[in-house]
Length: 150
Image (cartoon, rainbow, N blue to C red; front, side):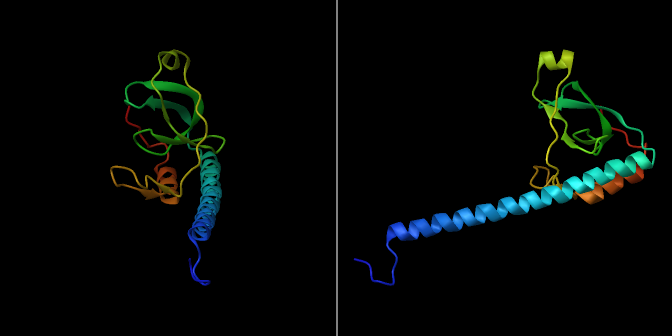
């Protein structure tokens, strides 16, 4: 029998669950706050791109194998030279990838906006990451001289 000052296993487990739930809720709040800040940066980039006369282009997506391009119906500005990330004219952030599809090759694909990260590429296999605001500033500074590998 446990001493009065020692919690039993059920009490200890309940406290651990509460603590874990609290940590998960805190992490979710932090992610939501970061997403709000990142969305503001992306929307600001789109506004500055329009103001500076940066020419928007038709955005295309690639499948996982990186073979072929898929029309998306979106226009905006590529953020990376490999064409994997972009900002649409309406200030939405897109990851330009889609599953391979013959129908998609013919008709095009529909992409949903993604939550932009404050640190682009964090945790990626190549180990390269860059702060979102730095990437956006670099892209804006490059102007229309920003070629995307096809």
